[in-house]
Image (cartoon, rainbow, N blue to C red; front, side, top):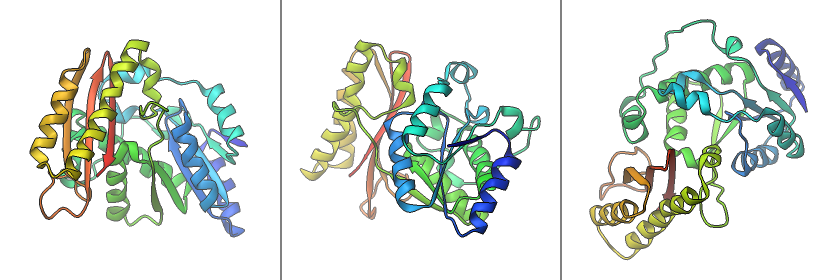
Length: 278
């Protein structure tokens, strides 16, 4: 695996490969890699010739400086995982390589910016689009792979690609879960053993929501039942549980062609998100 830390070097290397007819698959990450990330790499390997992973903890998408500070950065372990997964290129730039001092950036992605995650993390998706647009311009991928766990993020990136007319195909890959159902996340390492048991309530509530929808319960009933289950769990603070339109993330209506149940909660001191497509 080749490792680059500058935009010019990685860009020049990949341009040469593409000039020789190779397709590039890209998996942007913030590191602290787990099986969820590696499943994205596996998809990229199936669909493209050259697999590029970036590891960059992007400061502009954190609205809490403490959260940025404590975000895990186990770079040696990450490099080992990438090598074992057969990754071809790692781009691991310092902040100074990605940001040359303060920058103005605003992309009008409409309502999507202010719903769900956007409501609880104002400015987050501006930071996400800012850095992903930068990474796309450096790597110039044919296909980029993102995880379904960040469902709203995938929709935001699709919207950005549409608005900026970028020549990249976005692929959303299924959530990887632990055997007990917990969605894999870099933040899970912050969970104590007790917190981890409490965290299972999120997937339980999502599964129950899916079953209740099949049983014919109304969206309002399903949301109330799921919220009640989570509220009863010790040390767990629900932020939202919503059944949304899978295309827009607006509240589901009778006209919605696809539905997704999304949840966010703090378990102990750790904020977790999860979802299931209904």
